[in-house]
Image 1 (cartoon, rainbow, N blue to C red):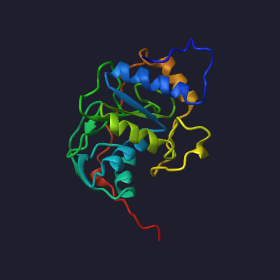
Image 2: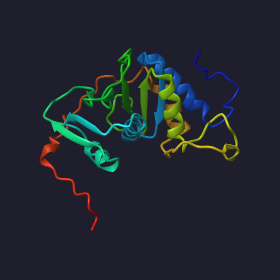
Image 3: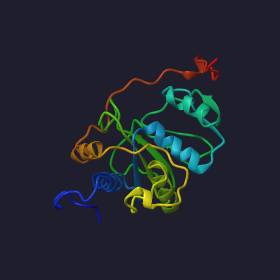
Length: 207
């Protein structure tokens, strides 16, 4: 059962985030949701957790996506495929759903990554989320998102064993804003198609 905002205060800094995750999962029809600090980091966590080594995806996307492929050493192929709302990374069950957020949008058995940045359906300024129905993967992603921390252990240094984690956690303020706006947002905002990234070159050497 989702937490309610009528409770007598937040017991810790993560309660607002947990509440937003539960409401987001219920709204989209997903079993689980993991809130992150941005969509690109949400995708990064999923690719790492799933140990993806090769993908194919649309060339009409934001620059951070091919940059991410280079960062985590994933071989990729760009295809000239235009899309609306979300697109799939072929060969995986991962979706970039940065431009989508509507009721019951979740695709069973899939992993959909959302964005709450400027110009997105739910605009919080920053933030993202992962929708999924795999309980084991959900637990893993939650640990990874918070530097490998088990949030049930406090203070954190009482935890003695950690999985490799990343500092990709959202803020309680973003979560509270999400709770206020979810369900009242514009689920079909107008936007321009991204440019064709087949026309750019990424140089990986810094020398």
